[in-house]
Image (tube, rainbow, N blue to C red; front, side, top):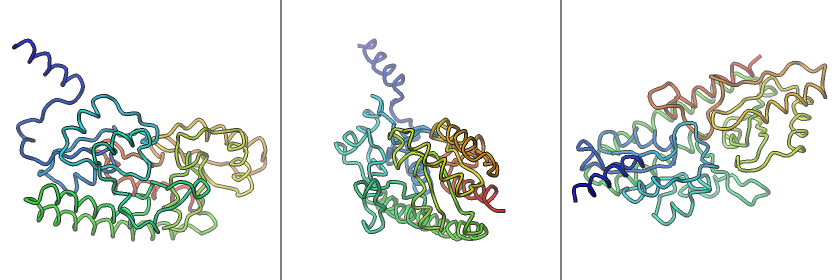
Length: 305
């Protein structure tokens, strides 16, 4: 009997699904899909919440395939939060069977961008800070619904955080306004910045569609190269959660097709943009506010004359 218990405990530890520590007992156990939602829960839940984030920083949620330990973590959760709008494409069945709350699905349908010939929803709502603040309200409501004992704390922290986002939204508008309208051209690996474009007056062009699971064809490369050369774009921006190879190929085509055009910077490395994931917890870009600030500062650096 002792051997059987030892075996079970060892198996759970290997799977990353070990039982909660003494410090976490009695807390609301929340499981979220992405680091973006994880940061929201940390900001609002504080010490009253025990949090599990399924996707590590740098993960592309479009292509993330759940592992066996994810199902175990979801089954043990008191509350499951996901983005919805088909962001977590390969996890949809797993999440729906466990009644996960999709925060994006609670938004007014009028505010959801339709893409791919009006056949699909654009799930990247967090790129409009004011719209993401509305999703934060959903997080607050759900924490209160599952843990009414700490309702006052959740509401206080949530209201404070939404106030911080209102300030951030104003700062983003001010910084982008400093870039001449003709130079506000954002070219990235995939079409994740549509909400950002609508909210802040930026023209956006992605090599791939809204989902990174879509294949990149020769026509995609040629069309973007033609766009870069004729638009005289200053820079193109890689993303931390998507490969950079495609954009590098586009640059090669552009240079051969427009040899006299001004040089185009390929922004990568530490200056790559954060799209579908935050940075590591504890770093400057480990929070939503930090990644938005980073992205806007990089855009201003390369697009402002």
